[in-house]
Figure 1 (cartoon, rainbow, N blue to C red):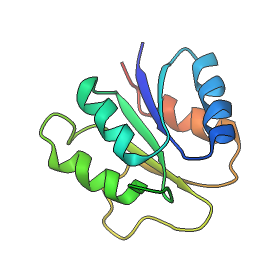
Figure 2: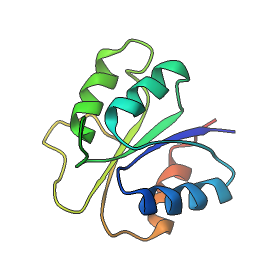
Figure 3: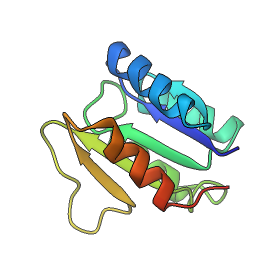
Length: 116
């Protein structure tokens, strides 16, 4: 069963996405910001990270850079989601979802990754 680390400062969005992803058979860990996500990923590396871009403390783009700097986490696929920003050119992400998005878009993206 693949582990998904879901990161969003909006607790309602986090809960809804956790439920959606969990129903598809994935194990879901959550974090409310990039700092907590990085700590969680270091303690237990996930198979994929799905992160909001705009969060307090550490945003999604900073989280991306920190993941890529760490040898154990550098190859973990990252999906960013945002209502406002888009990833900069050359961002090391496997996908981007503009909020609001259909849950099926996220599930399809996860399935295409062929996670363990």
